Amino acid sequence: MKVKTADETGVSLRTVAWYGTVTVLGLALVTAPALVSGTYATTLRTVLLVLLVGLVGRTYLGALLAFRSSSPPDVDLTDPPTVSVVIPAYNEGPVIADTLDAALAVEYPAEKLEIVACYEAASTDDTEEIIERYAAEHEEVVALERDEEGGGKAKAVNYALQRATGEVIASIDADHEFAPDAVERAVRYFVADEDTWCVKGRCYGSNPTDSLLALHATVERHIAELADLFGREVLGGFTIFGGGQAFFRRELFDELGAFDEEILVEDIDMSARIHAAGKRLRVDPDVVTYEENPATLSAWWSQRTRWARGWMQVAVRYLPRLPFDAALSRRARLDAAYTFVYALVPVITIVAAPMLLLDRTVLTGGTFLPYDWLLWTLVGVAPFLTSLLIFVRDHRHGYSHHPTELLAAITLWGYLFCQGVVYVTAFLDEFVFNRESVYVTTTRADAPADD
Image (cartoon, rainbow, N blue to C red; front, side):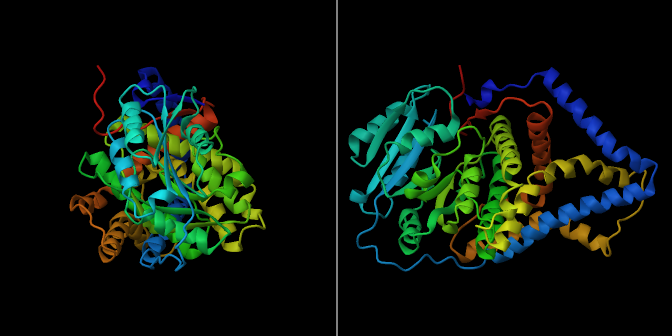
């Protein structure tokens, strides 16, 4: 898989025009019949409302379930397992020192801790210099150079895994900083249950004030990390981990093999493989790493299109299989079906969205659902109410939020609409234009400008 920076993936006017033309044609095909058929218009509104209710209803439920406490197992850690923290790094000069400092400061026996900082030889900033300096000053840090072309994060992590020696592998992105108790808290799950092969913690946004985009992305991630990911844990559903941080039992890689290097979201792919193997993937939102969200449009766009397209790749791979896999509980199978179907729902809702504009101008009418006005209201206020629930939950657990995050919750539907456009673009790339998958790295907020 090719790797590019966000700056290298510029979009030409011709590309914008081509994608725009295809999108407009799709919008016209879906919504134009509503101008001549009242039944079609009512059906389209009903489908759109049902899909949105399915999405926000799950989010409401998850936000309420997030109030459930997440106590780690009470086990004897007088002789804890060895832990290897794996950190892939490509042009991470602005953040890698803070990441290494946080990893060195965790509350875990130093003799049981190994930090494998794997940097790309192709890095053009001071990433190599910083990592080599830390390796010289701290015996826990291993500086590992990867001098290979392409591959993206999955290939970098797989390379680092060959050097890691720990019984537990902690994989974190180079812009993530451990909370002091994160490693010990995660390890408790592995000591308590040999069938636990993965522990996913919470990626907590640390830069909401960098830009309006970073602000909205931070609020979105709070909803995803608690209302979605932790909600799955409480429900006993199809738990998944995001690639920003996760912990693994070493045997996982012996049994299932390395991360898939040909898919854009290797983390979701591995989540599915863990469930298919009949093993447990636990989610504890108090295993915290603090992350930096994209602050510029190019960084955000490249990251979100990679995620969206990768989710579609995983959906195509596992939707025909996991909902029928006997290794999963019935609840997990249903949740897997919901998860992969909803990987495509943002595309459908964006295509059908012009109906909302037509309803404000030339069309009138409702849906086939009773009390649809109430359902539309619940959909409309969902981002604000779910964010408010999460902020209250966090306050009770000792986590703070910047005051502007509550204001961002009010305008989050606009942000989510933009994310829907990302999904449409990813859908066209994957299924219409069949473009080559490219791993686009995320530009850091305080990275120096190119000369």
